[in-house]
Amino acid sequence: MGAVRKRSTATPEGARVRLTHPERVLFSKPRVTKADLADFYTEIAAFILPELINRPLMLLRCPDGAAGPCFFQKHLGRTLPPAIAQIDDPQDGQRWIYVKDLDGLLGLVQMSVLEMHVWGCSVRDLERANRLVIDLDPGARVSWKGVIEAALELRDRLSQLKLQAFVRTSGGKGLHLVIPLRPAAPWDAARSFVRALAEQLQRDQPKRYLAVATKSARAGRIFVDYLRNARGATAVCSYSPRNRPRAPVATPLSWDELPRVTGPDEFRFETLRERLRRMRADPWRGIDSLRQSLPGGD
Image (cartoon, rainbow, N blue to C red):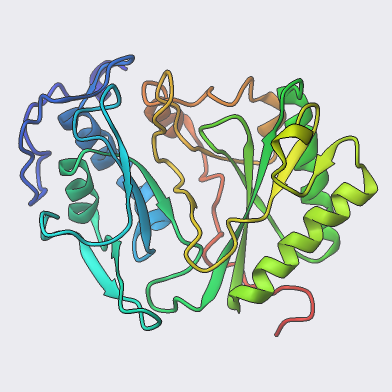
């Protein structure tokens, strides 16, 4: 990656979070230390922070790196760095984790967080979704080309409903379509809308799409996962690495470039910064200012 990658072993310049054991290896192939991951986030802060800040989080922590045991964490513990914020849930009093700035993100690195998953709402309004996520999850024998074609078909269906969608690689096998909502929608309405859309796809093309998570029926079909659109449900944050071989990164795309993407793991920790340097425009430009409502909404 040339001069972009700083071979530092300390906290990035300007940050107020101190990394302990910055040399600890989080990913082995490619080799990524805590310091490397902190450098990565510092460099791409202008892209990742708008996707991350002020949203409740679910975190995949791997204290000994990807090779060791990992666990998910969503509530505040006694050992969290002070840069990480919390919010009390008015429904049950639980405390949800979130970050407000780069220091908070680097605090997650200090905790050996490998993946960040976000709610589809702001901490300022836990009761309404301001983003919907539809996960196109291919079963066995579904080609990558087939996933791309499904994303384009779903984009067109949403456009007919006067909804603009954005697309990203999930860092896994499939693609996410992300639909911003302004004003935000109650969770029940958000989930019902995406579920109805998934079920309609299955009715129209039952050999291609599946709206239920039945593993025995997945082969040759794409599961249109609507389950991420509920209070407390999460989807991976854009620009988050994934704890998978080659350290793929969930990467926003433009619709024009989607057909040229060669596979679900084309964008990885080792290659993402070069992509961002070469981009002429943010592929998700305007996502936070777009005003659109669910059909029948305000």
